[in-house]
Length: 366
Image (cartoon, rainbow, N blue to C red; front, side, top):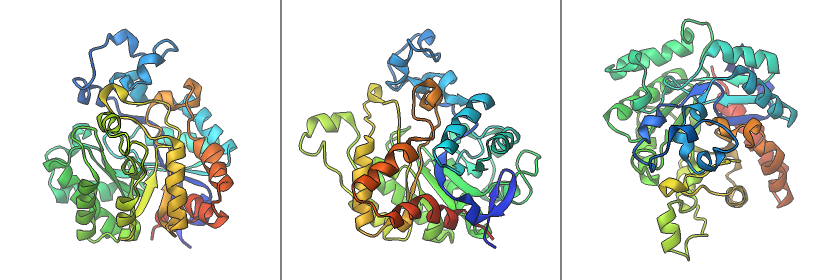
């Protein structure tokens, strides 16, 4: 029986059902407050707490400077948000928060039990500025041992085990190259799927060529392309730098799928994982895609026969993305994206692949 490893233990993979493949439940991204400190124009701290008046600033990208926004720490709020997901038809959430940002797995397990929604957590490492002390100055071999421990023995002294390997690279410096190699070795040795985050514009601009370079290293360590999830790939379907959009009017509305098709043709899976984002980063010159642009790209990829390699997520890593604060929470995909895809001709088979079949394949372990 193919199995998946959830925070409440192993389950038959077929019971995953409709799965959101890129989310964060309890997590702490507040280190971004320092990472981005010099990227934004100065702002008084009083405008960074979550309030209706402050949404003016927070939704323009200043959420990155707000610890209130970047620390997902409320069990009560999260239970309500996941209930919304369940009521929309969702069954499983993949939490891709690895070591360095992941919250209490005990509390995540409590939330899974109280809501009846399966939650799968990840081992691995987030960008190096988020590494905990236990992972600093470690060799590749020591990092592999650490990650395997979270798969085989449990996380933070519990018996709750990871069900995926996730590595995040924001600058692809020496440390992140080391973590990428360690994560790939861990995935290859255990047979677990491997999720790759590239930071886009986070610290240095990481473009599609950097993603290809990282994927090449992952394959080199023995991970099969069909076990790899390349996340945040929707950022590469269209120009998102404000300066280029303004200067090049002809290309400002163009969607180009050549790079994504090149990655897909290796057998790699790609994740469209920023549906329903209720903020923008125009303050630092970065413009978020609209959901209709993502849907247009996905329909074209479906028509080209790639639905067995595509996954969806909403990447709720900021509190103001919650429905409680006027965002879309975890429900945008099921409430809007899927119905719109169907309205414009997506086949039921393609929808089933993205929501059910592909997650079952990727989250099944030995």
